[in-house]
Image (cartoon, rainbow, N blue to C red; front, side, top):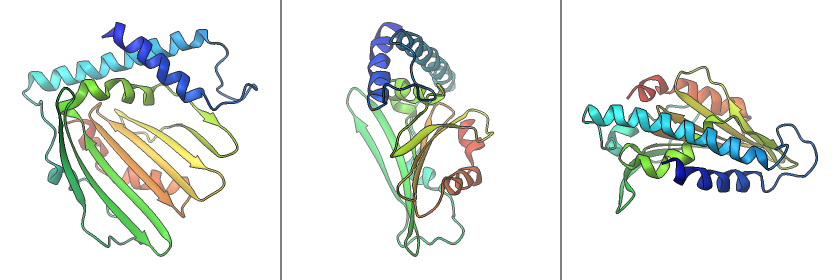
Length: 209
């Protein structure tokens, strides 16, 4: 596993920082030598994720939850309505496994929000390296946006936030229990809005699946 993830994660880190300036911005890489350290940290996070998956596997929990069950974890948002019911899907890809997803769109006048929950339990190897990056604490900022980790105070839930500076728009991505990816997006609200939605969800329950 390590032989595969180090070059893969080095590539991900290079891409992540490709748009950064060469000035001494907060959080900037000091040298290319940091790439190896970062990629090794990703490997460690991925190995922790795999260990949790092995524990679930030993209990016979090897498939993704049906999307109808995921929809039950979608939040209600005060002041917002849902013009249509929640959507969902189950995807099976040869060689990668299967995953399920539930999602909902919300409306409040000109304001919009979206929440989706994906269970990649049956496709763990396909997502482990990517989701491990959210636990590294990497951040960046430019004239368009700032992004980095946020602490929601919820055990086994990593959160990563993107806030756009020139428009009232933000995104929040959560990884719960090394199994669920929760994506929240909003237009017309500040970043505290998505954080409050996330805290209203049953993240503790998902993180302990």
